[in-house]
Every structure is written in structure tokens, then in C-alpha cells.
Image (cartoon, rainbow, N blue to C red):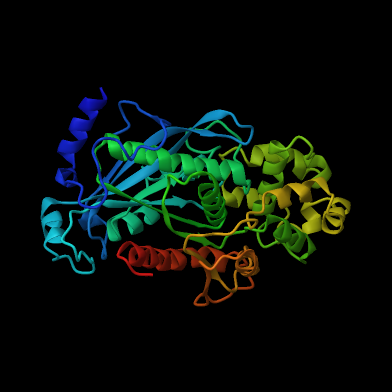
Length: 430
């Protein structure tokens, strides 16, 4: 069955006629792990968009594939997850032009055959299952994969995360093991996918992600460096990442107003669902504590959740409106507080990055303050890293009446800069 699927896939994709000028082999030597779940639908595109509909800047059309794979949850159990793989749909004319060095903007000095570098992109916070990459892509073009695959010609890999897509798990919101595992394991599954489909991959892997995705990217980079030397990370871009969870929690609970209460409620809910010693009724005020399982049922969107929680229209969104004041005071003052200890354990700054890393972040972000990237840079530098640099963004105007605006508008700017940087590294630059 796999051979038949492979044959059909090769016939339908012109790029697959290329040989291995840049590290590609067709004997499965690049397969890492055996966690890809093969079905009759694995190699059938769920999205096919020609270059002409993708707008200015698209060098190619795209084809996207939903995959299922095995990963590990925070308990160490093997569970099923899902995600999206997007590849450029390149024509024979494009490939001929690439080999002849005739494609503007693409550096091909050695006249080699085309091969794919992989970028694993981790999405930001979502609240409904319909927003997960493998599901949303079937109704709306995925702008991130269009940028990486149609415009920059990367093979784009996007995990849905546990709790989304086809997963039945609780989503590990800002919990490092669950997010790192789903990212590392989808990379392994994507390499297996590429080899089964005879896609020309070159061994280069990049990581990107914004907001929660920035945190997942940081956690995955740490996991890969420490435990997966078989994966070659070329560069990592954790954008607007809440990497120091403990400090961010203390600062947020000490602030006069919450920027966006659903994020904080989700954090409390996820930690209470994940850790047995966290009792949500001790952390969150009534009646909100009992409402959270329903609000975070993957059916309520961010707007519905916002208006169900304390907000500026129903009395204010000060932290004490949502969180039990005495518990918040104890968390701020007491390093032995159970929830604070869990936040500290899930901070992802206790390592020394050895790969190129840029911390893209808007300096006036009120949701994930720029302080998070400053702390990360200081910590990594103190640890001895020489490969991490700040990448502040100051082009988005603040809007005090809408604290989430800068965070939302900064994402596309940060991604554009990340794509440019990854492309420079892939081409041999810095």
C-alpha cells in the first residue's frame, strides 16, 4: 500500500523527479523514529493552492497534508497527535530555472538540484479546535505556511499540539514537556513522511513560533539540543515567548490590570488539569473556577471566553477579580507556593543555546512584555551562550484602549523578519 501511495504522490508532484544534490537520499537514511501513522489519506493533499491565487511574492503554489503521529504526554504515555505539512508545489519550469540560476532572489551558486529545508512552526494560543492548523487550513489558507512554503520554499511543519486536532489530551498550555514533545515528534514524523514520499530534504531544520508558539519553540530547541543530536537545528526564532513563566506570573498578578484575562484563565486551568496538587478552586474565584472546563472545551472562542470572565465591561479586569487574592499574594511572596513552583519548573531558560537564536519581540507588547526577551538574553548570555541575540521591533504603535493590539499586530512583522533571516542562513549567510 505504501508503495502505491508513494507512486501516486511522485507522479502528482513535479519536484520529485530531482535527485539528491544537497544531502537527499532515497534509502530512508534520513528517517528519524517510526512514529508516523500511515493511512490511505496520509499522502492525499487536504489543500492545493496554485501560485496564482497566493498573491504577490509567491514563487510557487502549495500542497498541504494532514498527518497523524505518535508523541508523549507529560505522564510519559504514548498518545496520538496531528499536524500539517505544507510543501511548495514547484513546476518543472521552476526547477529548470533554479538549476540554471535564473530564479530572482534565490541564490544557487553551485548549480545544485533543489532540496527542502524544514521549518517547524509552532502556533500561538488558540481556543477552538477549528483554529488548529490541520483543521483551519481546509477552510482558510494558512498564512504562515504560505510565507514559508510559497514565498521562501521551505517544507513547513505545524503541530496542532496535544488537545487540538485529533488529540484527546488536555492541552498543555505553557507546559514545556507536552509542547516540546509534540514539536520534536512531528519533525521526526515529517522526515519519515518526506522519505516515504521521496521528497528531497537536505537535513536542515529550523524552528519558529509566536507567543505560546514562541514558548513551544524555546522548549523544543532545548529538548533537541540536549537529547536529539540526530536533528540538525540551523536556527531558532522564539517570537514574543513567555519563557520565564514564574516571573511573568508574578508580574501579571502584581499588575493593576490583566491585559487579556482568557490567557491567564487558560494557564490556571491547564496547570490544574495537569498537576494533581493544584486545586483550581484555591486559585480562581467563584463562580469562574467551575466555569473553566466549559469555557475551555475547544468550542468557545476567545471573544466568548473574554466576556464570560471579568472584563472591562462587567466591573473591570483587575487580577483580584479573577484570582483568589490571598492565593495570589502567597504566590507572589512565597517561593514554596505549589503553583509558583510549577511555573518555575516550566520556565525554559536553564540551558545554554548553541544554535543561532533570535528573540523577535515588539518592545511595547502588553500581553507578553518585552522584558521576557530581555530576561532570556541575559540568562543565556550569563550561561555562556554566544549565539543568541535580541531582535526588538518598534514599528507597532501602542493602543492603551486595546492592550492586545500590539501583540496581535506584531506577529506578521516578526514572521516576515524570521523568514528573511532563515532564508539568509539557508543560503549560507548569517
